[in-house]
Image 1 (cartoon, one colour):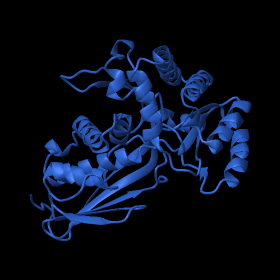
Image 2 (cartoon, helix red, strand yellow; image 1 turned 90 degrees about the vertical axis):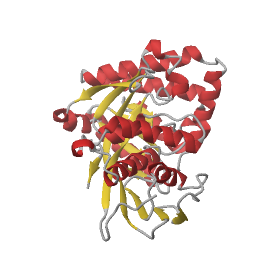
Image 3 (cartoon, helix red, strand yellow; image 1 turned 30 degrees about the vertical axis):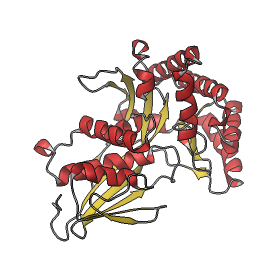
Image 4 (cartoon, rainbow, N blue to C red; image 1 turned 135 degrees about the vertical axis):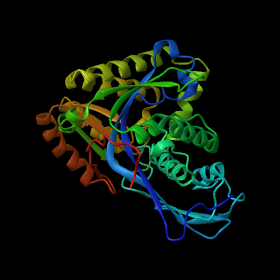
Length: 348
């Protein structure tokens, strides 16, 4: 193992978090048996970025710090992967580097179901690829970064994980991802739904809020995976796939009312499977969105974290006042910046 950073040098990479629709379908437990139905998720990258800054540290050691966690330093080869920062240490072990201090900073709330840990993994892998000269012609190998971040996170968490968070972090923009299950190439296909010129119109029609409570996606995802593996609710998952694909098509055609209808329907289906996918604040925000004729969706696997709404600007204006009243009486809750980020992973 070696430190390949010169003294006083630093490398910083950043990647965006995301809003999403159709999650869970990006978990291989689902997309391999469902591939004939073309399972599709949609994500919208946001300008709230997570940065990974790598700088020199004591030879033979790796130190990781991240807001909300106690900093930790271990000798190389001795870092426990079963650790709150274990994902970052596992990535360093994979690259065989040491003598590094890693600082993770995020502009999104911690554990907000916006893809935070996956985004940090993508940013750190990008930084370490740059440090270890694994970027041919200076270009970041985005597909390789996505698959590596996904594989390491799945192994560290020891539960089925999806890859839509890593895809949004690496590519940015507004995309539909169809999961093909291809084992000889990348197992997904990308479809750009909104070009950069369309971002301002989309931004006028979306709103997002943090509900004040961190999410616990493993609990809800675990229920969905368990039911699916025991062949429960299979017809329901086919309807979820139809909702997600229809949402993607409506967004592509700029039919925002239709898109809102499909995202609300998908949320209703998920609520039927797991009522706790929305916490109390999320349920209040969802009811307000319904009264205003706006679409509503939780982010990630829900169970706390964030929700987002889609609707025409005049409806969102009224909804914003409704949400403000709810959020103002909820500790730690608040609106999020919904500027679309079209850049993806980048060097700072």
